[in-house]
Image (cartoon, rainbow, N blue to C red; front, side, top):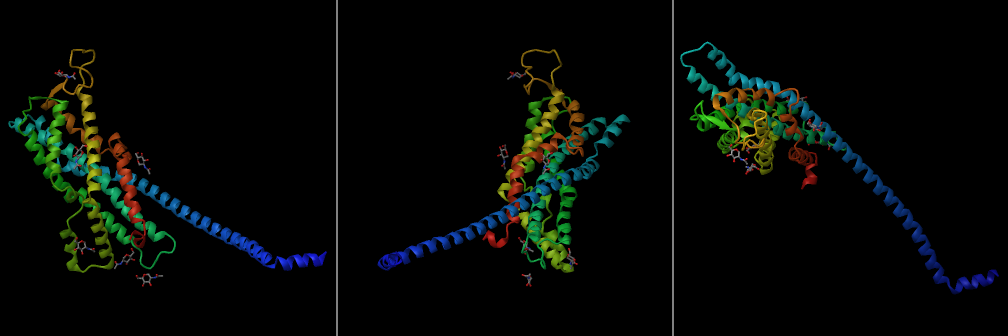
Length: 359
Ligand SMILES: *[C@@H]1O[C@H](CO)[C@@H](O)[C@H](O)[C@H]1NC(C)=O
Ligand SMILES: *[C@@H]1O[C@H](CO)[C@@H](O)[C@H](O)[C@H]1NC(C)=O
Ligand SMILES: *[C@@H]1O[C@H](CO)[C@@H](O)[C@H](O)[C@H]1NC(C)=O
Ligand SMILES: *[C@@H]1O[C@H](CO)[C@@H](O)[C@H](O)[C@H]1NC(C)=O
Ligand SMILES: *[C@@H]1O[C@H](CO)[C@@H](O)[C@H](O)[C@H]1NC(C)=O
Ligand SMILES: *[C@@H]1O[C@H](CO)[C@@H](O)[C@H](O)[C@H]1NC(C)=O
């Protein structure tokens, strides 16, 4: 029996070798596939974990951003109210001075200016902080991810602090400049509107859009970030390595602020902010209850008109709502805005991707 098998094998020798090779091949191939598969799964898992970490890091960064915005609103409001002090004017009016009318005219300009400045600066604060915290957040993610060169961090603590303190511009010189520009625009729109004239909500909206057009005709980034000249002024004192890194970060931020995407996101926020402001004003432009005369549909923006002198105190009080430290609908709206979120995610994505992968 054995010999017959042997003969069989001899006759089919080539076939057996071949089969052996195939069986062995499949075996090795299987092993190879399994190894590759587990390698693949490992890589997949590593990538997944990295992605999850990055996502987690992103989310916690957005929470930081939310909290930072809220914590900066009180000093922002204080800066606005100190500079555009309508309270001192109302106090003056109570003394029945001779130049009463003149003071009322001042009050008109100051009230509108400070409310409009509050809308602008709050929107800018939200969008600028998103950009800055996501740039720094992206770099921090890279600094903390595995296999990074820890001897030269992209954003050491001193740099983070120096970089983030540039936000002071928006509460300082930038705010002053913004006030000047807005005041001029308010003056040219409302300067000639008499105190006794009645305005409907639609007409107030029209005034606001004229003012916006004038303000936004200029470059908006100058209110958010100091010019290059200011940053370079320190150069005479000799720049440390940290300074150079900060300047590079500020350069990258400036590029971002001048990008069309940023302009769009800021515009979206401003549209949102100003329409919130009008919603608030609308509360005061309601027809008296029970009044059902024609043209008094609740959504008719022309139905009710108020004299400018009555609108002034309503507008004047809005700053307290806009810059409220307890999250107002105004700020919530800005923080929740999907386009702002998406933009933040893009900034983070860009800055948390290693440079060599970007090329
Ligand atoms: C930030 O605040 C907004 C508005 O309160 C909220 O919708 C959003 O979920 C917050 N984001 C984070 C990450 O906490
Ligand atoms: C880290 O970067 C520094 C300066 O770029 C370089 O001298 C050093 O060799 C790098 N270290 C590693 C581990 O790559
Ligand atoms: C740069 O920052 C690091 C940590 O943030 C600090 O240890 C170092 O002293 C700083 N260098 C200079 C020259 O200020
Ligand atoms: C920042 O940008 C200016 C001009 O855009 C350039 O002259 C300067 O070298 C840049 N600084 C750094 C540190 O990249
Ligand atoms: C800002 O948004 C308004 C309303 O959507 C639009 O009409 C205007 O063109 C936008 N401006 C810019 C500069 O994007
Ligand atoms: C709104 O009210 C004004 C003034 O009363 C009237 O002329 C206009 O027709 C009304 N519009 C609508 C849509 O009801």
